[in-house]
Image (spheres, one colour):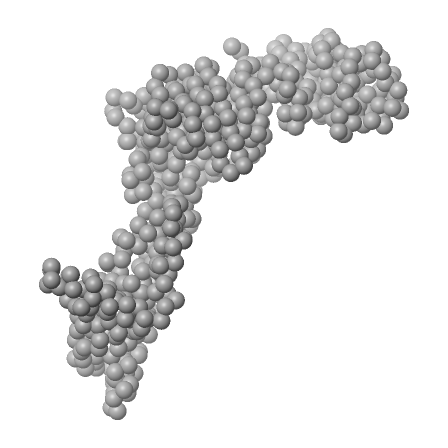
Length: 362
Length: 231
């Protein structure tokens, strides 16, 4: 569907990207300043790469050797920006129709009413952008892009400027767009949680280089991504099966590699289904025996199978039915006299777990 | 006291005519240059910027003299204009328009450039990605959003034109009814023994015109800001 091989250089920043996408939604994941937005800009034609090529379906949009460079307005690639970029001098309905009236009737895939209904924005049409809230602006911005009938959609951190409740609202609209309109899209974010609401297929970018593509469990588990995952706090991502929600104690009970664990209570979990959960390696403590009288709810028994000293301490790999990565200080490591094959208990506070919502049914 | 003599009246009207025309002829080049400096990087940009600002820092008399050398009937361009189109700029009100236009151009460009720079490039990129070509984007997004700055630029240029003295008197002289604008008329009346009253009347007119321009510009700016939705 979308394939590319491009190089871009500006000043000290170097970006090299080479991948092909075939998923309905792909998450472009990376830290701030990793080149996510630049890559988007290159795909949309808003910035020109130094060399390379870009293809959407069979249409070449950019090819440096063949001197092909389709203008952004002819690419049919829709962009939704982080800060919505509504045109302040136009009322909402004219914002929505800006792209719509610029495409040929035959190429229009959606009608105004269809999009208005989908995004529930009927009551906003006569307003001006400055009268809208952040979430409303982002819905209009999304609607405006959709009405231009893009063949591909680029969403550049569309939720970054919104607070949590609005994020979830917009995410549900994005899911509708994905499910009902069938436009392939790239969703850019530095939040794994957001991405996993829409897809588990990732392109991971770090310092201008693509360090992995594919299912996120595979990508983030690959060799060579440790620095990246620890930077993003994603060293430990697991699939846990949700057993029950215990409203009285405020916990969700789940099964992780055969261990019973306690997670923060959340509506996101579906009983009986698997959910992605993560815990930072530095948020885990190690004890040599089970500890009584402690507030920490999770004490998972495991066996040390490997350890690597690093700049800040020791990375300990513990087998709890699957690998758990734990970071402790050198002093703690020495004091506890830890060795390979030692049996230990991993102490994890309930609140240290983040959950990524239910696994997408595919 | 406030009956203007025909001479005074004609000086006022001439000033308004010259200023209006000078704003009209620099408007489009001003927008283009403002956009060029705000949005494009090219070799010689700082040189162009410098040349544009020259009239602000050169003594106006020098600018006027340069104009005379270039556009006077013996001048390089002036001679050609006269031979080809039978147009004479020196010592005519059209020349006064050229002189005031040149003097107020930097002010206009500066204001437009600032207002275009203030528009987020992403706003224009959004328009491009929605299917508007570069021209279309300029006219439907950039220009409307820069409107307050363009209006301010026009008023500034107009006010500057009303006050233009040095370049005008050097290039087109001080001919009553043709090139004697308000400042030139005031200067002339001060020079003659019984001109004090006339000079003072024109002084009042000048203050009123300048002040109205400022008030008007404030009003339009607020309107425009409301119109583009920032307030």
